[in-house]
Length: 254
Ligand code: G
Ligand code: G
Ligand code: MN
Ligand code: NA
Image 1: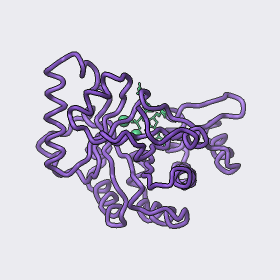
Image 2: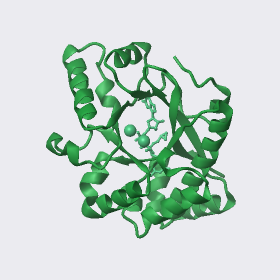
Image 3: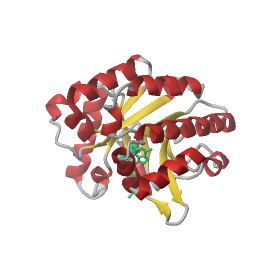
Image 4: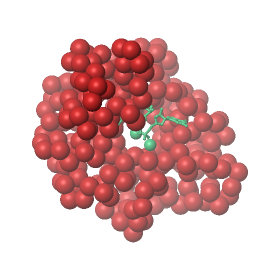
């Protein structure tokens, strides 16, 4: 299609960008990690959302180039933040199912991390729960190879898929990103609060660190701290932004 041709040209020209959203450790309120989100400004159409150009890249056979470029940009920005703040940060990128099960994916990621001189132990791959469910053994093999190389895995959008709680202990993951739907009515429904409290306890048992997504209000932030949630992300702390804007902010956020 035209769109994927334009994307391929932008990739070759180095015109793809990433924005970084801060992830806050609780209760310290330090920025402990950033999630890199791909941004593409089409030369004529203007900004195209990733929900459009990622599938186009998959269909058009340039998802490998896209993923490698996002990783390169994310690690370069993470170097900048570490220098600015004088402390270690983790950096995460999202990976789609088609990319994860592609031939040689794990090796490509590990080589790209070496080229970027970024430690695998500070790199997080965000994979949605539905991808792990749907992609089966191939996805699990890729995730195992990545973890063997030191890469951390986060289950993204947790709670929106269909995976059974009885298999939560089989997810090959270091982090569990609680979908923002869990935050709906968190501060007004005691049943909802109890559910999140129980999930936090369950994940602690399984050595999975929970990141609450979609935190938009100070009330939600305060309640998550009270519940002992280890990390949080959302517009309340900061939107996705270019590295310069994030480097200029204090790493301690309310
Ligand atoms: O900011 P937001 O509109 O960025 O992101 C929309 C969706 O696009 C999210 O589900 C996010 O995970 C996904 N996304 C953003 N960047 C990338 C990327 O580099 N690769 C993949 N596979 N998905 C991405
Ligand atoms: O699927 P994934 O979790 O990677 O998608 C992240 C998406 O959520 C991005 O589009 C990002 O811009 C968006 N996002 C981040 N924080 C918030 C928030 O607090 N509220 C809402 N509604 N969206 C958010
Ligand atoms: Mn994500
Ligand atoms: Na998510």
